[in-house]
Image (cartoon, rainbow, N blue to C red):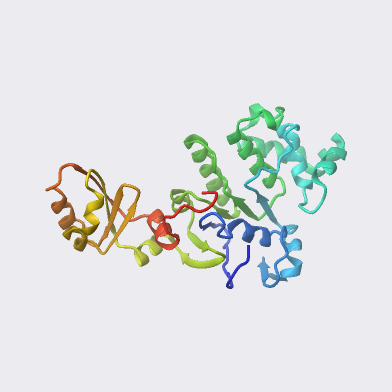
Length: 307
């Protein structure tokens, strides 16, 4: 990913901050630059008062930053316990698999401090699976093990790349609870996500990327108030698409179409809702504008490759 303009932002202590954007926007690439997987051509990172230039970014990764990836960095044939224990010795620019296999049980205990690992296992509620090979676990449990691997590094800052993608609602809510608890324990978290409700629920501030550019930044509700009309009326059913060329269009500040649904964005919904009562064959949904509306306004409704 080529970042086409300067992207500058900060993550405060005890803060969860989100990066959102379509597939290919540069979210994962930005995390890779921060934790030393990629070496950027220019720029700097300031961590705990010390500034590193772009060539020193791998040093930052060894000074209190841990990372999870979209593709889980786990050894599927090893147990939950051993994956988290060897997590303390993971370095992205080493031969991880051979390195892990060469560690004997005594060495692994010395590196990982079993007591701390056991507390992580308890914290993530995976005690019943501690001896189970990771490859035999459901995906949601593997996600928790991957977070445990990162926590074993005892980081001050966590970089989480889509931490709840692929999880069912119960597992998502458990992950949200654990992230909130980590925040209370003093961690700072920078995460990427495609779930707008997740970004709005967890994050005090967010950064919107597209095509390698920062296109908006701020608190979710502030951005919604700044860039969107407050009310949205969704209309669908027989004849809905014809409304885009009808007098009702003048009752909204902005009209968008997605599939068979027409979205009316308005500062005052009641006149539009009253007019729609004359067409009972149509179905309507009146709701406040949300972060997904903001996302689509900035990035469009067209499906991107891989979306």
